[in-house]
Length: 322
Image 1 (tube, rainbow, N blue to C red):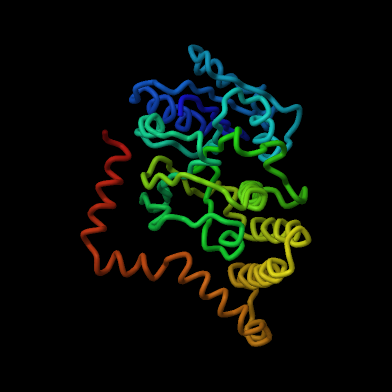
Image 2: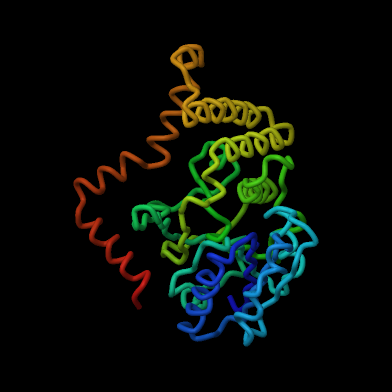
């Protein structure tokens, strides 16, 4: 890989954007600088940004590869990501949220990758929980990325920042879509479903190294459980008529599970709901939560495999130290 476009949608992100950009700049300075990259910031809070004295281009005056585009009005993260795609100059593109960061060895690892044969590159990372000051690895096994595995929830793409898309292999026009104006926030899940459905023989490169850091904090949009679940259900309904009858049944089942889980997580689930629900839905919900999301495995690993715990701790130290 010798080029990369990095798209960052910005929405009232003054609190986080410097940490995000500094992590990219620092990682690049630690590399051999074999990759030509551009940093595209799409401003989606124009009134707030234009009235702010601390504008990004004034904070980073000596960045010729910095490009800033201001939306006429607040148009949502999907619009901003698509806009960044449209104006990106390079073959490889990734999308980083304003409150996330790349690890110090991000560019160093990318320099060694041959991305051309693949539709996209996926790498591992950490979720940083600010309230507990802890890092948790995202993937413990190699993900199986197909449309079916996504529907079955065997694989979760936590953020598009974990992916680098090859525009020579994937049609990127309107890659991100808000399927319903009131259900914004799941456009990244739509994108990976759209890619795997459009390219059933998809070829991707998995890099099992923590190159990315997702920041979990009280201001995360995804903390709005009802909003996120409603968005997921809207997306599932969007794809339902576009697939074969077998997949339609799986999607219908997942919609039922999502509605069940939404009630559970918003404390609206009653004993009557449990008894009235089909057994398959209830046990599918439990199986999805405890098996595919790896909770018991994580607990076993922490309890009985302290050596692996030490390895994880070394990885955490390496986030801040070279």
